[in-house]
Length: 462
Image 1: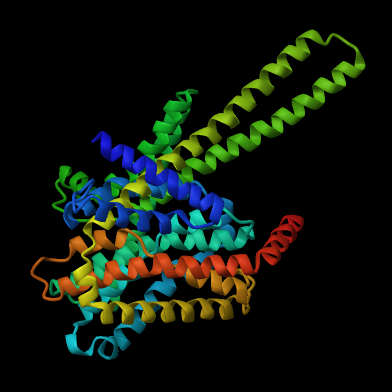
Image 2 (image 1 turned 135 degrees about the vertical axis):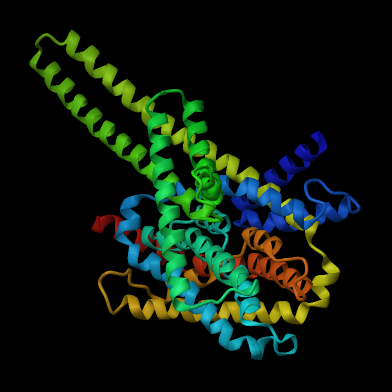
């Protein structure tokens, strides 16, 4: 166990150094280092001996990754870009699945995939990895609106892809009839229920925050809120059955975690803004009192007390956010190490044709969806206008992640194409991590000055 911790720590240190010095995104270097370490250990395992153990690890660590990424969002941005994010994370995913169904006979003609199988396969490779996107964007000055679109799309896209996978793909695979009414009813129920659960758990977290001024306790509340929302939404049927409902209802743990964290974080931001405004006011009052030369002792003591309290609260919030980010970095390292251990290079090579076809198809579909978004955004003032540079960034921000492998484990073991699906999904994850990251970096570096100017103009506009 100690050796595992040492290896994980050294790998993370090396990845962060490569990111700082050479601008190599940490997910890219972590995957490469993980493969090298696994081969160097002669096939010995550090975290996961099989895909079942890997899926368990992903489910354990996924909420902390969602919490960390959700802390980058705030309600004002979500409201301002609601229609844009709705298209990117919901409409684009739905349209991509429809296109996939139409192209399936051409792309995988020899497999004769059913509609349910096509939905499952494409839902897995449409889910993106917000951690990779955030790690790349953190190194550059990019327009705030562009970051919101990419990071928000990565987060909410995962929820949509998982809903499509479970409630449409698996449902159809088990013989359920997928109708327009069923899709609409299920979408409203799952999305609405997940949002309500997330909102309620978020407010429970807010109540808990009011009971403490301890930084470590505040950190624990952040983590408990995110994990609590995830667990309640995924096992809502247990609660319903306590009341005699005899339900098998599942909601989206991903969406509930995002909503709970954003709710909690929004109130923390409002509190910090209020106290900062109060601090400025107290400084003004203090200055005026000193200039008047009147009885200033009590005024000075009172003002200094309020300022000290405000600074302490703001610093506590910021340090808690940094602690969550550190935990997320460690969690991400563990996931990439585990993924390297479950990769079967023989299977990847055997299905190399299918992997490349899927990678190219999903890349083209995503590029078309982002181009359609760019066109629509210029037709309405309710959506964020995109230029060609932003289209490129959004297209190649679709890096895949560990959630796709969790979906793999949900497919029945008796499914005839399971081996091919496993190879394709893992292969696309690896190709997208290396190729998308390289292209994304090239676009950002090539337009670095323009992006910086756009950021300055954006700040000036505000």
